[in-house]
Image: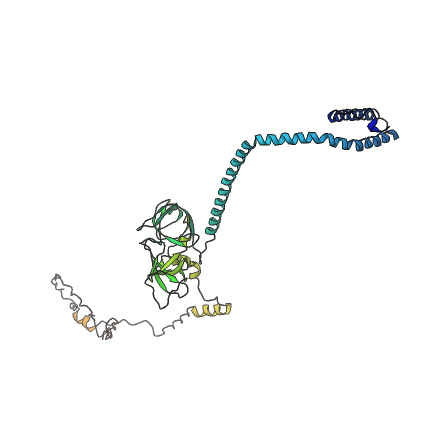
Length: 394
């Protein structure tokens, strides 16, 4: 009899009940296998191997059924997750926005720190030849106006800064110190109307004076030489007058529409936040005085040194010959002295007392300028020549 003619052709079995019955049967079989396996743990024999094969066969048969039964559960979990995500999307969006804002602040701070470190590294790499001591300072205040361009930095005399010391940024020369206190200094910029800086053109070595006028580009004055400057020429400090060391970068020469030569300063290409003050007094500090005082001649060899010592040694005096003629006769008195001396009294005659003569006040003769008085006696020999007189004092 065909299936369509059987009494079960109109039988309809619900799918849910079928799945439930299959799951219960599978669970019962699994419990049975698990219990039987627990009871047979003490016996390791061919029966255990048979149970293992039976369990493997059962798993192979049950796998498609488990996949079919797990699919609705998985779908339900996914749906519940989607519904939860939909309801909590607003709060999650707010949380993510807050996190993005915090990360943006961190990124901005990171960029600022990187720029600051880069500027610090550039400042620390500043070198002069010959080397000059430097002090790093930070700008704490500035003054802008048509008649004043100055900065206040946080280093002063306690750090060795003095009036007149030049200052540089990481780009080039900024100005010089015009006022100093214990912990602060006033810096006059190159653009100030009172600023005068001696400079030179690197290409032609021509000298000029950089004069500030309150604008960003100071002008060149007192420029000497024919064809001394061109557009784009590099301008350096000349060191004339001892205000600045020679060779510090200043800027680039450019000619404005009125034909006036001006300087586009390197220091104006960025913000002046940090400066390096050169503790520069004069050019003598740039030279090693000890090495400069050393003798330039090479040392002598031992033979030359012995010859030099022998030449510098004093010659011994010759010994005096003994005088065989006897004692030296007395020197006779001068006739003038003998004539003025009083004669001795005759023998047996009483001595006549002589009157005492009181010496009167004598007036010393004023020596005439340029005159030389000689006392000449026949016995004294010829007068000594006077080297101060043109005729020798004769």
